[in-house]
Length: 181
Image (cartoon, rainbow, N blue to C red; front, side, top):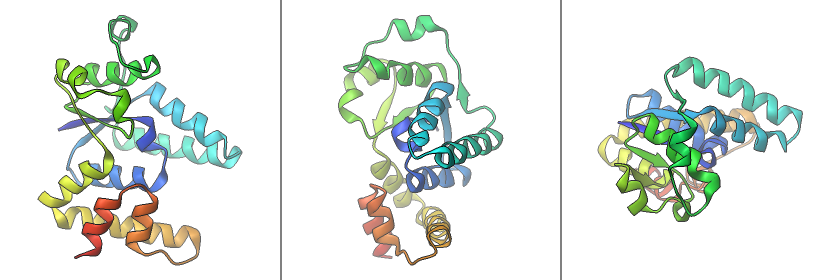
């Protein structure tokens, strides 16, 4: 299964780590475009030079891990598309060009299901998507979540627990599911 990741699910660190960790474990193949990565870096730059440097280095690691993930397309593809927010048509164009099965985004309003269905695509929010994978493969998602939690604890030099970490990352259903185990 190929899934295009919108900028809004790449930028929050924990959400990105969860999605890419599950992808690295073989649950799906992630896709993105250069513009999506540029949007992430632009947003990260607002945190200062360190934020931009971190986003740039992580983008290089993502490209090395998934060299086929960056999708390119002809401008004519984007020009023929319509979405409620014209600034999002590049995401839809990349999904179509990459033969994605779906788009993971937090922007449900900007990606109406009927328009996506016309292109053979579905849309999911990251929490529902990851929860669905957890339902099918709980051990896989739990292992990724344990690694993400350990990294959060290491970087913050503090204490984090799974449920608050994932809830803060806008993954509340997954947080509840993993806490119940």
